[in-house]
Image (cartoon, rainbow, N blue to C red; front, side):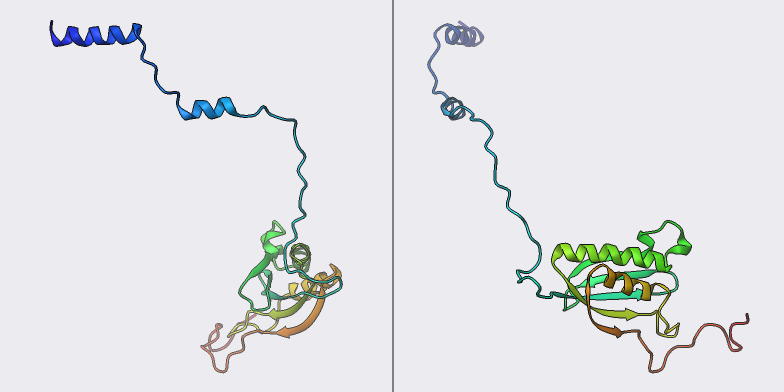
Length: 183
């Protein structure tokens, strides 16, 4: 009898004379599971963001308002300035490029930021207003005042208001040439 025929005979025998094998464990767990019960309603825990404070207690953040003549940034951080809570620009609120620095866009940005702050639990802000500065203009753009007013009207308490425009002690040459910008 050849080896090939011996293998065929062994397979033939195994088909008819089944040797009992142990049942795999994943079959046993499926059989032993309890039947499903009706849906049990879970109690939803209310998730609150921010610090645990008493009612009426003020939680301060810092509002960095950067108002250039091309855009207005309203950026809220914690008191250290490291952790950003919300940042919205005027360009995120309007479609036309010319409207990015407008008071209306700054107002919409400030309202959006104030809403996000209330979700986190910040109720008051210290305001730092910044213009472009350096060897450029030291005057804040048109959106600075309206952003500040919109935050106050949205219910945020205002702490200190500070101007943090970078003023050079001595600077590089300003653009415009020797005879200045001719209008």
